[in-house]
Length: 293
Image 1 (tube, rainbow, N blue to C red):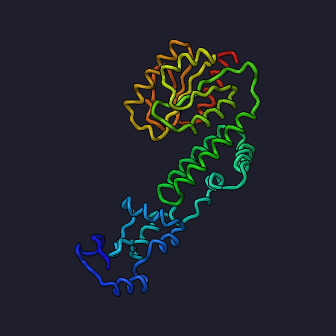
Image 2 (cartoon, rainbow, N blue to C red; image 1 turned 135 degrees about the vertical axis):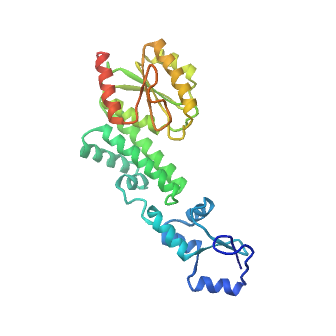
Image 3 (spheres, rainbow, N blue to C red; image 1 turned 90 degrees about the vertical axis):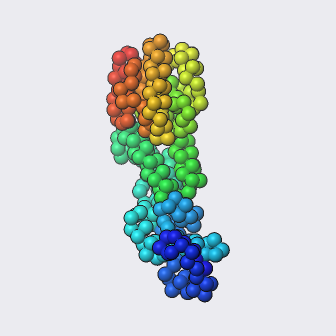
């Protein structure tokens, strides 16, 4: 029997024979049938219903059943749900589970095509955002998203390490905003900085800001670059962090760059806010020249 408040009166009951008839005639679809139509796995369909994006009715045994008209409406308003996740080249490269150097080869080809690493980094950042939306729409699993992020981080590390750097190049200290666990933004910034002639020292995530000043001294870094991902949406907290970072660089005579999609203040004191990697690359080149690098 079916029980639902989505298109049916509460308390409406159907006997088993009517339930079977509705499925057999195609008026209602099973979770597996919806998944095949959408080109995703059954788990994605369940997540859509849990999030309230796709309505369903329940059998007496707790199984989901979906009205065909509702499924057609959903797929019409969520085009990414029934498109292959790998259709866009960058997303396809990130999700490809080939050899460990396949993604690296793709990134190198993108560098040859675009002519600049900051353009490659910009496209990689957009692809990560696309991947997050695909996960939200249920087109990829969280495991696939994590795998893609890890492959990208490893490829960026290898590529950045292979780029030439002058022995006297200035150094940048790279850190995450406090409470932010995502380091891919730093990896993209590191690639752009290398293109601009900067070396890098990683503080990464979970490094207390109190340790950044001493780290600047020990490493000789002339630039502190701090990234906050989209998950860092507390503007008040990031404003306070930006002020603390500004005090640190003022004491140590270093430059400060704040990047990522987090809610940094637009005009931090004693620092620069960047939302565009090309602008960051130009600024980094100018800073290197100012330092005589």
